[in-house]
Amino acid sequence: MAYIGSGDASQPAATAPYRTRLTDDAPRDPAAAKPPLRCHRKAVTEEHAEPSEDPSEHVPWVVLLVATTAVVYFRVVGYDFVAYDDDLYVFANSQVTSGLDAESASWAFRQPHIGHYHPLTWLSHMLDVTLFELDAGGHHATSLAIHAANTLLLYAFFARTTGSAARAAMVAALFALHPLSVEPVAWIASRKDVLSMLFVGLALLLYARHAERPSAARLAWVALFYVLGLLTKSMVIMLPVVLLFLDYWPLRRWRRDGDAGWGSARGVVVEKVPLFLIAIGAVGLMLYSASLIGVMNARGTPLLGRLSTSVANYGEYLLMLSWPLDLAVHYPLPDETPGVGVTLVWLASLLLVSGLVWRFRRGREYLVAGWGIFLVTLLPVVGLLELGAHVRADRYMYLPAVGIFVLGVWLVGDQLLKLERGRLFSIAVGGATVLTLVVLSFTQVTHWRDSETLFRHAVAVAPESPRMHNLLGRELANRGEMRGAVHHLTTAVRLRPDYVKPRNNLAVILWRSGRVDEAIGAYREILAIDPDYASAHANLALALRSQSSSAEAEKHYRRAIELEAEYVNAHVGLGELLLETGRVPEARRQLERALELSPDHAGARKALNAANSARTDDG
Image (cartoon, rainbow, N blue to C red; front, side, top):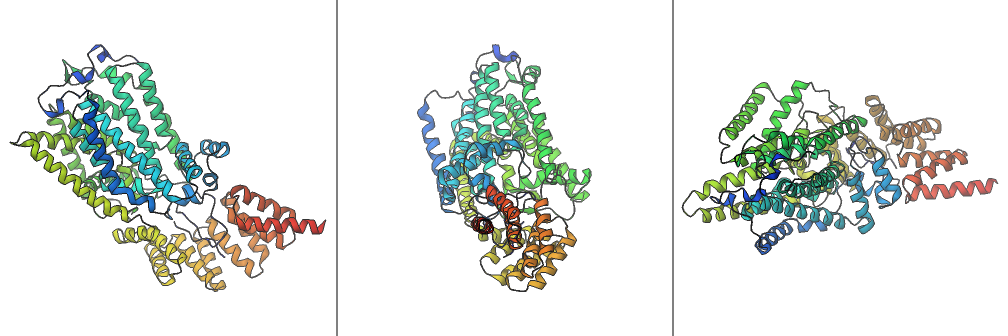
C-alpha cells in the first residue's frame, strides 16, 4: 500500500508501521537596603492589603481553583491522541516511543528537531511513554496536572506580592478557565506551552524572594529556571523584560520615596544583564532551529507586510481574549497582508490604549505592568518572523493573557470598590465571569475528543483553511469514508493548487481503489510541482513496483531517503525491492536501518527475517 503521512510539519519523525501514508499536512539592587517589599503597601484598598501570614487563608482559594479546573478539563483523560502533531511528538516518533533512556535523552539534546530546540519537552514526552506507554489518557493527565500547577503558581506569586488573595485567585481563575487555555491543555503536542509556563511560574516565585531580599544566589536560581523554560519553549525568551515590568508593579522596585517610579532604574536593569545575555543566545538558537526546516518567513513576505500583520494580530488576540468564540486549532495565513486602513486602525487603537495606560498610571501601576507584559510576551510570535503556516494560535496567548488578566482584575476591582456595596458587586461580577468561562471552556474541550471532531470544527471555523480540509480528508479516508474524503481533499487543492499533500492523499485513494495508472500519473504531477516531496517519491516507487518497474522504483526510494534520512517506510520499501532483485546484503542494511529507527516495525522485521533466510539458503 502507499504511504499515509501523519503530520504537516516540514521535518518528519519516524513513521508508524509500514502502511499507506496519507499526508497532512548581578550587582546588588540599591533598593535592597529598604524593608521587605511586602511592607511597602498602603492599607487603603484591597490591593494594598498586607499579605496574611495565616496559610489557612489560601486553602479555600486553592481548593476552588483546583476544583473548577478539574470540572472543565477532567474529560481529556479519556481522549485519544489527535492526528495533528501528536504523531510527530509522541506516537509515531521512534525516539519518543522508546521511552526515557540515555540514548533518547542524548537525541533530545543533540540538535533541534521539527524546527525547535526544546529538549526538556522531548524528555517530558519520553517520561510519559515510560510511565504510561501509549495510553493517551496518561499523557493528557500530565498536561492537566501541569496546568493546575501553573494556576496555583500564578496565584501564589500575586497573592504574595500584592497581599490580595481574592484578586490573585481571580487572575489565576481567568488563566485556568479561559477558552484560549484549552488548546495547550487538551493538545498533547502543546506540552511545551504548559511545561514552559511551569518554569516561568517557578522563576516568578523565586524572583519574588529575590526582590524581598536581593542576592546573587537567588537571582542565579531565577536564571536557572529561565534557562529550563527556554529549553522547553523559546517563547519565554521575554521573561527578563517581564521581570522589569513586575519590578515596577507589584514589586515596586522602580521607586523613589516609596512610590513606584523610575528612580532606581539602574539597579533593576543591571542585575538582569546575565538574563539578557541568555536571551540573546536563545534568539540565535531559535532562528537557527527555524531555518533548518525553512519555516522562517517561508512565504517571503516583505518586512512592511509582516509589520502590518503583527499590528493587526495584537488587535485580533485582544478580540479573541474578550470574545472567545469560534476558536480553532489552526488559523490559516491569509493570501494578503492587512490593508493600510486596517493596519492604521489597529495601530491607532494600540497607541491609544498605551497612551491611556501611561496617562493614568499613578495609583494604577498595574496598568503599565499588565499591558507591558502582554505586549512583550506576544512579540516573538505576533508575526514579525512569520513562523509556520498559521497567522495566530490560541496557545500563543497562554502566557501573554496573564498581563491582560492582571490589568483587568485590578482595574475593575478598584472601580467596583468605589461603589456602595462594592465588595458584593465584586463577588457577583467575579462569580459570573468564572461561570461563563467554565461553560465556554467546557464546550471548547469537547472539540478535542478525537481527530475527526477537531478537524470538522476547524473547517467550520475557518473554511478557507486548506490544511484543515486536507487533515479532515485524510482522517475520513483512513475511516473508509471516501466520498467525504475526496470532497475535502479536492477543496484543499482548490483553495491552494500548489499544496501537494492533499494531492498526494487523492493519489493514495486512487492507488487503494486499484487505479494504479492514474495514481502513478498523479504522483508524477505532484513531483512536477514539488520535486523534493519525499512522500510522493516513496508512494510512486511503491506503485511502480506493482508494475515491475524495479529500476525506476529504486531511484525514487533512494531519492525519498536522500530527502528524509529517517523515512522508515522508504527504507523498508527499498529493502524489500532489493531483496526481490536478489541483492540480499544491501537489503539487510536497509531493513536493519529501518529497525534502528522503529524497533517495533512489523514489516521491517518480517522482511529482515526473509533476508536472513535467503542468505542462509545461499550459503
